Image 1 (tube, rainbow, N blue to C red):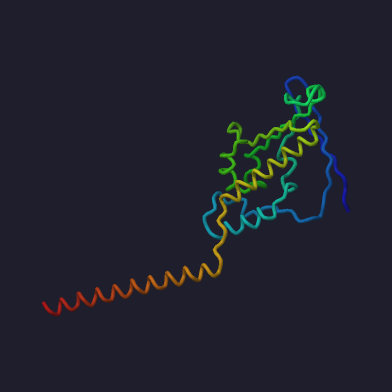
Image 2 (cartoon, one colour):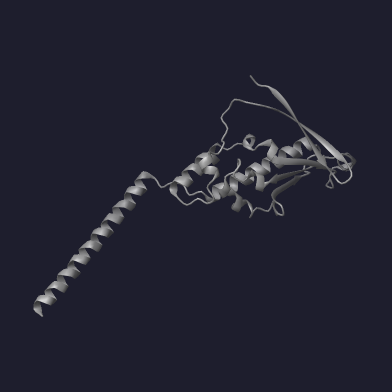
Length: 201
């Protein structure tokens, strides 16, 4: 059964206090939660690491980003849109704390690629995304969340090496076997030459 939930978060701004209410529902669908093994991997080294990472990111959805991991603030838009935009707090800024997220729900190996994102802030380590494209804060908030999701997915997919196919593995193994056979044959011939020289001496 789907139960509606209301989450309230108080944001302290320089001159005002904003109370943001977000209404969402809980679903019984599959969530791509990273395993404890994957969460602890700092860099993708082994092929098994890449396989685990691929499985996670392929099933990763926007709803899998914990709502408590980011803070949403609103402010007046400075962009085009007329008096309505300038008088209402339609601009939305999202801040994701990477220090708290890393190893908690976000695998550690994603942290380094995220530091190269244009949305990255070093102090404190976080992702900061703003949107004022729409006249409504609701749409701008959806826009920031979508950008956050796409950023995580993009940087993760860039560092994953897809596993080699079975046919390719067989070809590589065959090539290695032939090279080893050639190397062994060369050593045998070299040993025979040395032995024949000793006999001659």
